Image (cartoon, rainbow over all chains, first blue to last red; front, side):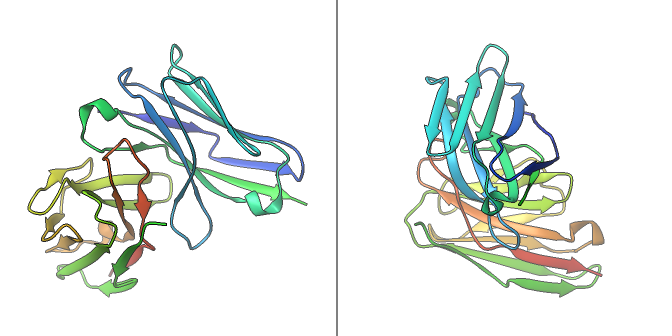
Amino acid sequence: GEQVEQLPSILRVQERSSASINCTYENSASNYFPWYKQEPGENPKLIIDIRSNMERKQIQGLIVLLDKKAKRFSLHITDTQPADSAMYFCAASNTGANTGKLTFGHGTILRVHP
Amino acid sequence: EAAVTQSPRNKVTVTGGNVTLSCRQTNSHNYMYWYRQDTGHGLRLIHYSYGAGNLQIGDVPDGYKATRTTQEDFFLLLELASPSQTSLYFCASSDAGGKDTQYFGPGTRLLVL
């Protein structure tokens, strides 16, 4: 099966700086990479995703990069705000297998300090 | 946004107890999933289903059964609960199974004493 490693486990940044979370995967057949944000006491919600036919995707202050050769993908949050404080999960899936399975990283707790 | 509901939201049982967690989605999604969330482990897939009557084994299935009675309803069964099953359980659904967004329910917090 797939294994996804996510680092760091805890990330503390100052407001208005950027934050970066990195994930690696093992299965070269993985082709879909979503990112979920989970606020305290809430459920995970999709914030951005990237498919293997892209190397970069941006939605407002969120940027995801995908390096298929290195089997690495990353989330970059620019101009962080205290509201960005949350748990973030990366995940990987091989959509061609039609299993519907997402393999999640262990999560990163982001703390944005004023 | 897709609607996924779970019940109960909180449950306390004793070791050896019998627990059923319920999940319902009203978006006509084919795929449904049960995850557990534990500190240091992230979200781990227990069981999932492609449709009514279908069941697929996830990554951490030991001690759990599941049943998909209708397209809307997916149940997770713990027939002999153990303290190691104390966790936060999430149900999720998606339309195109791995090709589309998974929508999560609000979660069920289970404590096994």
